[in-house]
Image (tube, rainbow, N blue to C red; front, side, top):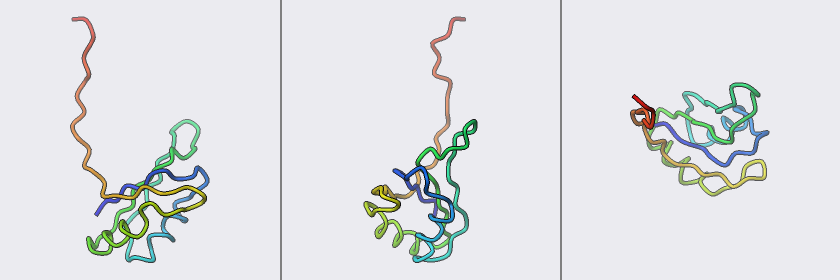
Length: 91
């Protein structure tokens, strides 16, 4: 299951997230989203856990809990929708 983790402190690292989620089971990957130019965290990440039951436990236990001085938002990630051009241009 892919898990969205939001409201992260800018200093929170992928290792910090891996440590927090490891208490609930196996982690496939941690992807901390960073600004492509500055390299600074954008304040959210995605954690992939292969077991849905372990992921559900992690979501339940970590949502609205503090990490690095910030209260986390943790929930199942929604699939990305098709991005369509917004239009507005002249033809």
